Length: 142
Image (cartoon, rainbow, N blue to C red; front, side, top):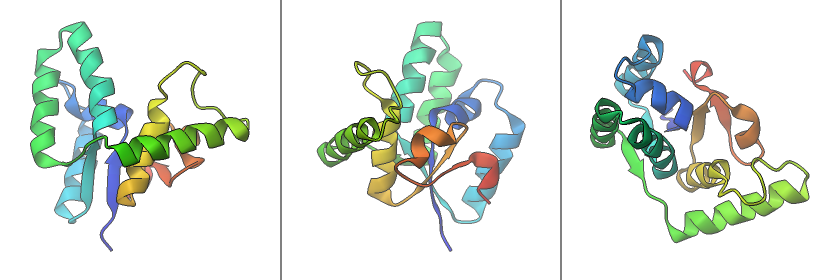
């Protein structure tokens, strides 16, 4: 069965780092070699890119750009933002807000992107995403 895997900011950052984490790089390569569909969500790209720019991490920006050529890029669309708004409101109604009231709430946007492509989020922060979509620690996705 082909899985659709979306990378959250944490795992993506470990891959895009100038000295990438060998364990997660091997995991990603194994997923790609197995024919899994691995997605680069635009919201994760945004979160990482802004930090890389702030810190002057040009090698990481270059690596992030290269990953966009390797992985399947998921742009933020109107339908994704509308679904994210629904997720954001639902979380608050359930008393399970994933960010402050004023925050953009990237987790809700990422969940909406995962919902759009029918994928599982590879993350290190399962609890915020599990409210809306399937999410697993990246080590748990085989």
